[in-house]
Image (cartoon, rainbow, N blue to C red; front, top):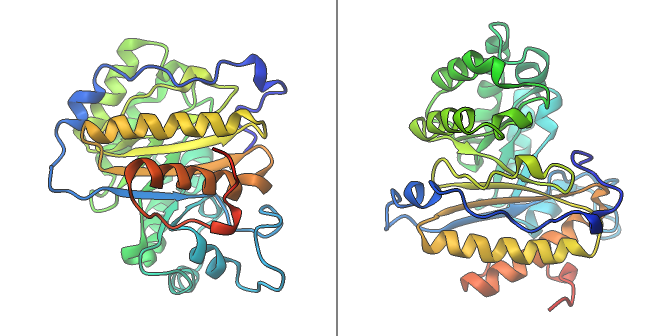
Length: 295
């Protein structure tokens, strides 16, 4: 992921901002008996991107990936809607506990930009995506960086149209969604009302969209490493913050790791899972051979 890439990460304050004041109120609405669910993964399973992750001779990349992680942030669905049988094939290649978190196809978000012509493509996307059945996690919609608050009516129509049986998280990249308190509150109040997640994007070059505001009981985090030693400290800080949120009622953690150069993403993910397991006293699936010796 090139979004938010910087040449000199050392010059950026990468510490996490303070929680938004409404976070505690949102989490307080959680049901105490709901179990904690944590899914961690990368954004793709392509052998060329994740160099040195796959053992020599691996032929079915997704099958091996699914034996190492419990989730994938599926960016492939952004580029096209696959044939129905493809979703069935993917479904059969991963364990029963595995979840797919697919990105809404670009015809909806980037080409049609949620206008009236976007909805036939959205219907087709949802029909195909339903092929993941019980292995479908939260779908996420990522809008173009130049999609700003002037398109508010399109956002309202989209969330009203979205079928409630599909969990969704929304990612807005235009800075004006966050640097105006009135606009930010209008957007987040809408997402709270509809029980939709507000994606958290942690990337070095866009600290302006690091809002730290949850709108339901889900932390959907897209972490972008800088291919820099600071990536490990940043992940440790996320573990601590997620732990604090969990103590306040957070039950759903969906954490996906990218890098500007993706080849080390599995290594960072394995490190993060090790820290999560230690802090939360759980035994989340992790590629043990990849876990570094960082303390």
